[in-house]
Length: 180
Image 1 (cartoon, rainbow, N blue to C red):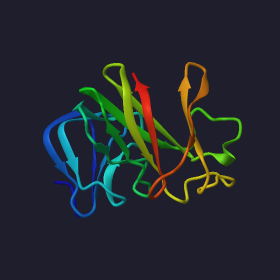
Image 2 (cartoon, helix red, strand yellow; image 1 turned 180 degrees about the vertical axis):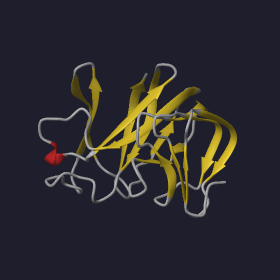
Image 3 (cartoon, rainbow, N blue to C red; image 1 turned 135 degrees about the vertical axis):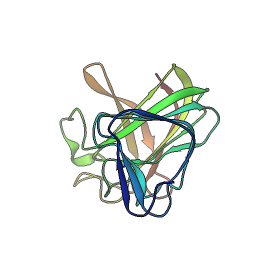
Image 4 (tube, rainbow, N blue to C red; image 1 turned 90 degrees about the vertical axis):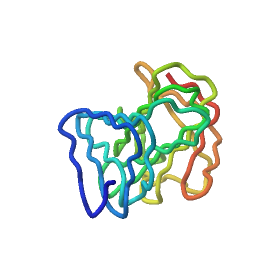
């Protein structure tokens, strides 16, 4: 259990079998290391989540029908979880960064977050939710309008989904998408 204003900073990559329970208030800071979970994470929220503040990933193994939530944020002040459904039994790794990396020509109309998501196998038809909040858009971002999702492929950004309507509290669902 992680709680009580604790920030657990990883000093090496770790593998956990079982349940990681975020109680009340606490964080796991990845830095340059990976945290692999052979089980589940519960209780993630704005004051209790995995901080992906470096090149480290949160990896969850054997994701099937789901939903499976990656409770991640770039720091203690941000929470941008990813939810994966229809994972095809593959292992998924996720992290989030503040800003767009690599940069785009004009980020005024964008959510200023980059989610990095990868899987252990190519899986078709994966259903992904990306969550952001009302302060994370560029100055001209229309929170009530349609959105697009881009993927950086090779040397440039490519639009992989367009005309998406945010649902709930700033949640974009990308379905289906192929993840590899």
